[in-house]
Length: 102
Image 1 (cartoon, one colour):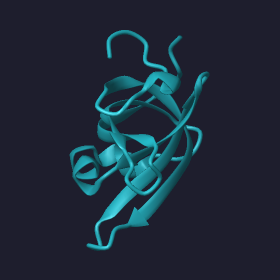
Image 2: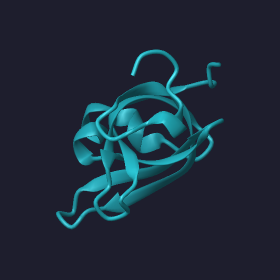
Image 3: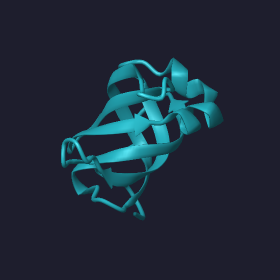
Image 4: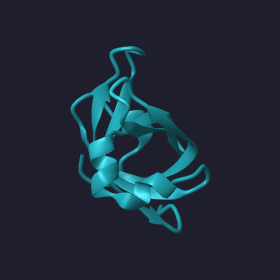
């Protein structure tokens, strides 16, 4: 997706790059005992779930320090969550940023 990406516009298969607010950050353990993050991200258009699997966390060590209230710049892809049947962002890379850009 080119230009500013709004959460309400993200669809399955979309490449997503943008800055979002992390409303909630949960550290979880998968069945294979690997750690991953589940996040609720927001912008002025809405809220979306997002996941940073263990591979993304290994490539982006700052990922494990994310907390609610942080702004993050991320690259990922819109994917359908097979359990919720809702689109979520699967994060490939992320970094903290100080503010949301308009």
